[in-house]
Image: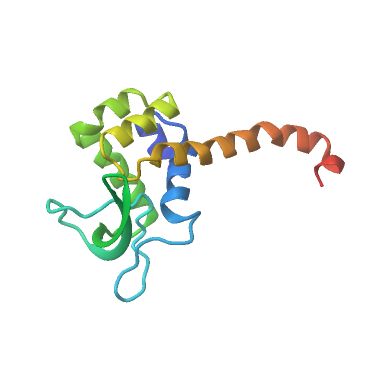
Length: 155
Protein backbone atom coordinates (compact mmCIF):
# COMPACT_ATOMS: atom_id res chain seq x y z
CA UNK A 1 0.00 0.00 0.00
CA UNK A 2 2.86 2.38 0.76
CA UNK A 3 4.23 1.96 -2.73
CA UNK A 4 0.89 2.73 -4.40
CA UNK A 5 0.34 5.81 -2.22
CA UNK A 6 3.91 6.98 -2.77
CA UNK A 7 3.54 6.60 -6.52
CA UNK A 8 0.38 8.73 -6.49
CA UNK A 9 2.12 11.46 -4.49
CA UNK A 10 5.49 11.22 -6.21
CA UNK A 11 7.40 10.47 -2.99
CA UNK A 12 9.76 7.70 -1.91
CA UNK A 13 7.73 4.90 -0.23
CA UNK A 14 10.29 4.85 2.60
CA UNK A 15 9.39 8.46 3.37
CA UNK A 16 5.74 7.50 3.88
CA UNK A 17 6.82 4.53 5.99
CA UNK A 18 9.02 6.86 8.03
CA UNK A 19 5.99 9.02 8.70
CA UNK A 20 3.99 5.93 9.69
CA UNK A 21 6.83 4.80 11.99
CA UNK A 22 6.79 8.15 13.77
CA UNK A 23 2.99 8.39 13.99
CA UNK A 24 2.56 4.84 15.30
CA UNK A 25 5.72 4.43 17.37
CA UNK A 26 7.05 1.86 14.88
CA UNK A 27 3.66 0.14 14.72
CA UNK A 28 3.15 -0.11 18.47
CA UNK A 29 0.13 2.17 18.70
CA UNK A 30 -2.68 3.52 16.59
CA UNK A 31 -5.90 4.99 17.93
CA UNK A 32 -8.30 2.22 18.97
CA UNK A 33 -12.08 2.09 18.91
CA UNK A 34 -14.08 1.80 22.11
CA UNK A 35 -14.27 -1.98 21.65
CA UNK A 36 -10.46 -2.16 21.43
CA UNK A 37 -10.23 -2.79 17.69
CA UNK A 38 -7.67 -0.95 15.60
CA UNK A 39 -8.66 2.23 13.77
CA UNK A 40 -6.00 1.51 11.10
CA UNK A 41 -5.08 5.22 11.25
CA UNK A 42 -1.40 5.14 10.30
CA UNK A 43 -0.90 8.87 9.77
CA UNK A 44 -2.52 10.40 12.85
CA UNK A 45 -5.19 12.07 10.70
CA UNK A 46 -7.78 13.81 12.80
CA UNK A 47 -11.51 13.68 12.20
CA UNK A 48 -12.40 17.34 11.83
CA UNK A 49 -15.93 18.69 11.54
CA UNK A 50 -16.10 17.91 7.81
CA UNK A 51 -15.20 14.22 8.28
CA UNK A 52 -18.23 11.97 7.71
CA UNK A 53 -16.63 8.58 8.34
CA UNK A 54 -15.99 6.58 11.49
CA UNK A 55 -13.91 8.18 14.20
CA UNK A 56 -12.29 7.34 17.52
CA UNK A 57 -11.43 9.48 20.53
CA UNK A 58 -7.82 9.22 21.62
CA UNK A 59 -5.32 11.00 23.84
CA UNK A 60 -2.71 12.87 21.83
CA UNK A 61 0.25 15.14 22.43
CA UNK A 62 -0.21 18.49 20.71
CA UNK A 63 2.10 21.47 20.70
CA UNK A 64 0.53 24.82 21.50
CA UNK A 65 2.95 27.72 21.02
CA UNK A 66 5.79 25.20 21.24
CA UNK A 67 4.60 23.66 24.52
CA UNK A 68 3.51 19.99 24.56
CA UNK A 69 -0.04 19.51 25.87
CA UNK A 70 -1.90 16.21 26.31
CA UNK A 71 -5.48 16.34 25.09
CA UNK A 72 -8.22 14.11 23.77
CA UNK A 73 -9.22 14.50 20.14
CA UNK A 74 -11.06 12.59 17.44
CA UNK A 75 -9.15 10.65 14.80
CA UNK A 76 -10.37 9.09 11.58
CA UNK A 77 -11.01 5.35 11.66
CA UNK A 78 -10.65 3.06 8.66
CA UNK A 79 -11.59 -0.50 7.79
CA UNK A 80 -8.05 -1.32 6.66
CA UNK A 81 -4.53 0.04 6.36
CA UNK A 82 -5.13 0.39 2.63
CA UNK A 83 -7.94 2.86 3.38
CA UNK A 84 -5.56 4.79 5.64
CA UNK A 85 -3.01 5.17 2.84
CA UNK A 86 -5.75 6.13 0.37
CA UNK A 87 -7.16 8.75 2.71
CA UNK A 88 -3.71 10.22 3.31
CA UNK A 89 -3.26 10.62 -0.45
CA UNK A 90 -6.74 12.14 -0.76
CA UNK A 91 -6.17 14.54 2.12
CA UNK A 92 -2.98 15.89 0.59
CA UNK A 93 -4.26 16.03 -2.98
CA UNK A 94 -7.62 17.62 -2.14
CA UNK A 95 -6.51 20.21 0.39
CA UNK A 96 -4.93 23.32 -1.18
CA UNK A 97 -2.76 23.95 1.87
CA UNK A 98 -0.64 20.92 0.91
CA UNK A 99 -0.10 22.00 -2.73
CA UNK A 100 3.42 23.26 -1.99
CA UNK A 101 4.37 19.94 -0.39
CA UNK A 102 3.12 18.03 -3.42
CA UNK A 103 5.14 20.27 -5.72
CA UNK A 104 8.23 19.32 -3.70
CA UNK A 105 7.40 15.63 -3.38
CA UNK A 106 10.53 14.54 -5.26
CA UNK A 107 12.79 16.10 -2.57
CA UNK A 108 12.01 14.35 0.76
CA UNK A 109 13.35 17.06 3.08
CA UNK A 110 11.46 19.82 1.24
CA UNK A 111 8.29 17.71 1.11
CA UNK A 112 8.33 17.13 4.87
CA UNK A 113 9.22 20.76 5.64
CA UNK A 114 6.31 21.90 3.46
CA UNK A 115 3.90 19.49 5.16
CA UNK A 116 4.96 20.84 8.54
CA UNK A 117 4.71 24.46 7.38
CA UNK A 118 1.19 23.73 6.08
CA UNK A 119 0.16 22.57 9.56
CA UNK A 120 0.10 18.80 9.06
CA UNK A 121 1.44 18.32 12.60
CA UNK A 122 1.77 20.60 15.61
CA UNK A 123 5.15 19.21 16.73
CA UNK A 124 7.71 21.86 15.72
CA UNK A 125 10.25 19.05 15.12
CA UNK A 126 7.89 16.79 13.13
CA UNK A 127 9.67 17.08 9.77
CA UNK A 128 13.07 16.57 11.39
CA UNK A 129 11.89 13.47 13.25
CA UNK A 130 10.45 11.92 10.08
CA UNK A 131 13.64 12.75 8.18
CA UNK A 132 15.76 11.15 10.91
CA UNK A 133 13.86 7.87 10.52
CA UNK A 134 14.06 8.16 6.74
CA UNK A 135 17.82 8.68 6.91
CA UNK A 136 18.20 5.57 9.09
CA UNK A 137 16.53 3.51 6.38
CA UNK A 138 18.66 5.10 3.67
CA UNK A 139 21.80 4.33 5.68
CA UNK A 140 20.65 0.74 6.12
CA UNK A 141 19.99 0.43 2.38
CA UNK A 142 23.46 1.78 1.64
CA UNK A 143 25.10 -0.65 4.07
CA UNK A 144 23.10 -3.74 3.07
CA UNK A 145 25.17 -4.65 -0.03
CA UNK A 146 28.41 -4.46 1.98
CA UNK A 147 26.96 -6.69 4.71
CA UNK A 148 25.69 -9.19 2.13
CA UNK A 149 29.14 -9.29 0.52
CA UNK A 150 30.91 -9.74 3.89
CA UNK A 151 28.51 -11.55 6.28
CA UNK A 152 31.34 -12.59 8.63
CA UNK A 153 32.08 -8.93 9.40
CA UNK A 154 28.43 -8.04 10.02
CA UNK A 155 28.20 -9.72 13.40
